[in-house]
Picture (tube, rainbow, N blue to C red):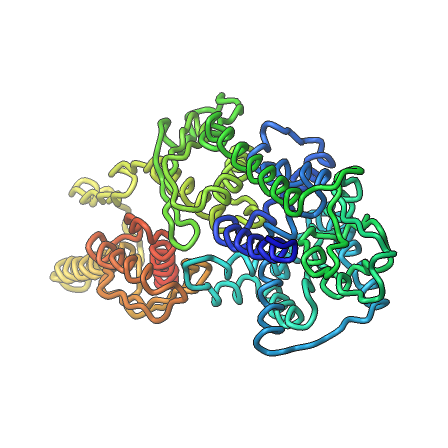
Length: 556
């Protein structure tokens, strides 16, 4: 086989590998950058623990060492966002015949922007823990939309990551004109790799005296590196796609490790194998050691039981993770303290779930609350874990028992005055009985007054027992993916007689499943009913919306 055919085959193999990683590990680049953030935050907060944060550092451990040795091979062979850029540019060239040449000076200046963006994220967003830019992250929008084999969740991306989605659309459009637009100018992880890969051992070299003036290698470079100016490519921008090697008609471009030449593709194969092996080895090690299965609290359990909220024991709870996948956890409670959170089962992708679980469980145990920050790049899994723990805690709650004596009305009996008491009652001097039957009429009048008072007291007692005003009331609450569920509730004689859904923002399959909670609430006359498995968010949205309506109907 000729050298040109071998080089062309290399590009085909590279594209296949890119597609494989796009399908099986589309979010590894998000997790790698989030892992760098985890290290930085742990260092500045003086709370970094390598073992404790191992599940969140797997991608960093897999990618950074390989980048030091092989350069930015991850960007050229494994990054899903880079693969998207390659596909868009290929479509623009092959089908739309778009031809656009970026000015060299402008290209060189714009490449510094990703370093500025990285510095801003570290010095401002990470250091001061600013969250207002979360919705502007195109990576999060891409993570929601780029799920192989499932319909892209456009509505959620637009709702939760509005600015990020718009930026993603702009990047997609720009990628039709400039190859690897995001990688060149905007990727903060690419900025990290550019710095780290300065230490790389594997480099591309060529002999300028054999090149002539064709500049084919430069024109074929995905990152716009001016290859014609150099004999050895030290630039941190090189992603080792080897398009320059394949394009050179004189076979003048070679790959070197140190001073030794390497066969074309060997370096890339070693880099991909190294990163993949480290990634899966780390994941297996975490699973085997139980790092991602159980997290235990070390908090004191000396709390008094007099005001205890939860009953001691172990309780299971369920939550909805990515695209409706169910997460089941068991939570151990001791003296009102969450002591242990253990994974029973989950349906999310393992890389995202493991990343979310370690952080979320530690935050819950530390704060003793389910209201904690979701993990960037694993939002769905984070929320699923939080909801599962909250569900378990709800089951652990101690229901207060109210004694009947506390709610029964106490009726004070008024003693009937005796004749002796009447005789001893002083009579005013101004009082003169005029007729003999005055005493009888007075007695009747007293009796009528007593009867009226009794009726008023009865009515007052009846009204005091009324909890809700009759009528129709609307209530709203957040359901799945923060969609708003609105219901109308009809109250008559303190009973819920009808519940109708006015509108909802949930996915229809999940909401239809959750609809069963309405029948449960009508039967039990309570909003404290069991959620529908697999539709926890939608169930809670309906129940909370009914509770909101009932709150409006309550009598003061």
